[in-house]
Image (cartoon, rainbow, N blue to C red; front, top):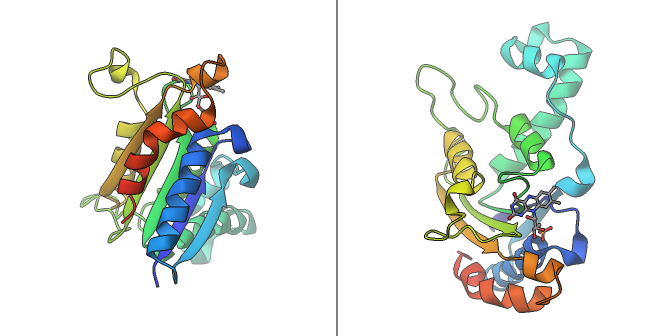
Length: 206
Ligand SMILES: Cc1cc2nc3c(=O)[nH]c(=O)nc-3n(C[C@H](O)[C@H](O)[C@H](O)COP(=O)(O)O)c2cc1C
């Protein structure tokens, strides 16, 4: 029975293209895996903290030297990491904000990229979250596909591939769902725009 970890970051609910397309992905995934389990991590609702001194210190100290504050900071990180290890497939639906990931997704990344837990640290620097596949659905106002003038300003898809690969998640499909400015300015509906990306989203379902 495969498990899909569905991570969502847009705060825009039904007006969100990344959520609309992620829902299509989930529906197609369920049809393919009727017995499958889906775990949702909604970063627009979870309000993760930024890593601070108790987390940073605790990460490098043996557990028997942890203070209560460190234990508390690491417990959330442990829970998010456990979700990753328990998943066979990961879906990340996210907007592009200022050419990269939104702050809530970055907060999640900072909590799950952890030496000796999700990567080995030096000298090997091996990712430890292996055997997973991941699909990224990235919605943006502009269009960043290869060959487009703005393509070089996409600091999100390459960054996500890099950081996921760093913890061992190397099999990553990316759907760049650009062009939501047309919806914001009223020249297209979200469904019309979504239709353009639905074939790529369905093709990404394993
Ligand atoms: C704070 C903020 C920053 C944004 N930065 C960019 C950007 O750098 N490039 C871009 O193409 N669109 C940008 N946008 C537009 C969003 O990427 C676009 O609205 C996208 O559809 C949001 O994803 P969602 O539809 O899933 O909510 C930005 C929007 C906001 C609110």
